[in-house]
Amino acid sequence: MRVAISTDGDFVSAHFGRCPSFTILNIEDGKVTKQEVLDNPGHQPGFIPQFLHQKGVECIVCGGMGVRATGFFNELGIQTIVGVGGRIDEVIEKIQKGTLEGGESLCKPGLGKGYGLDKTECDHPEQDECEH
Image (cartoon, rainbow, N blue to C red):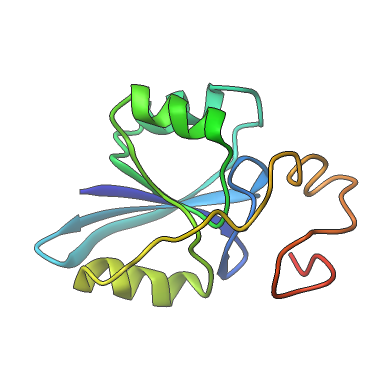
């Protein structure tokens, strides 16, 4: 299986579309056979799902994603797992063990706007300021 994780440094990015990069994993029989980090190619509606689809991604893991983006991934047959946070290495370990669980998206619609550029506040339940 080929998995993409929205990445911000060593952590899962809360904002899928505005993350600085994606960690791409090939997982076979519970083992990572290949791992690479790709820069985010740019945030435009439908572009990232198509980009990841062309890279052979079958599943995207992230903190938050809007309904529209989820729809784009669904159209391409890519599974979405939202509500995931924490260190990338811990998430990879859970993927390998088959214990990764998603939840409610960490961000509300529109909260990713300006992320990485001019966004200064996030409304994540566990923090008052962006720490990305």
